[in-house]
Image 1: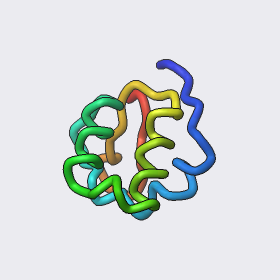
Image 2 (image 1 turned 90 degrees about the vertical axis):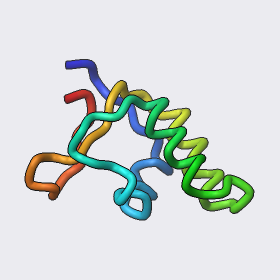
Image 3 (image 1 turned 180 degrees about the horizontal axis):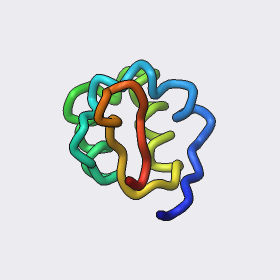
Length: 74
């Protein structure tokens, strides 16, 4: 398993975007695209979150099977 390095803003804002994460693993690029396609990055909050995804280091993101936590690189 590869280590993660999450941008502080990403860590702070992921709860607002957690509904875009599902139990199937998504690559960082897929998650980034999903955020961009769902929300306008002309909105400052959405833009900052999108930038925080790009600055964070992880390969995949997904929900745990019980849907209570977000897992990285699983």
